Picture 1 (cartoon, rainbow, N blue to C red):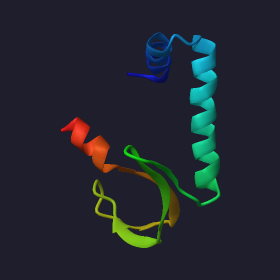
Picture 2: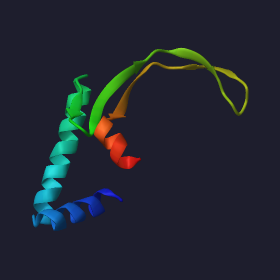
Picture 3: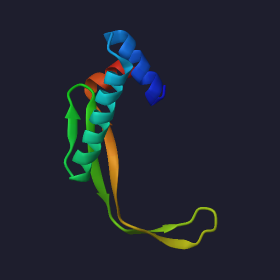
Picture 4: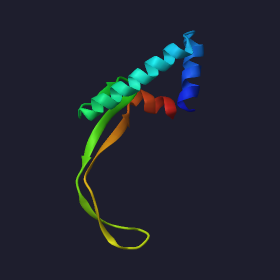
Length: 90
């Protein structure tokens, strides 16, 4: 399911206008982006937690060439599914 399909389905289930649902979805996504950019986390009870993780610079090996490389440090977004989410997906 893509974003457009999600918006359509939520609009049908809630009898809301697609434009209104799209605004809510976009605002939610942008709020998560902004919160993670500030290095804070977003927890949605029963669903999961969006947060960032700092990955240190490290030495690695290019699997295609065997050449030694340096993997630069990075801030990565991660999602940890909540208990309820995990149980529903089983």
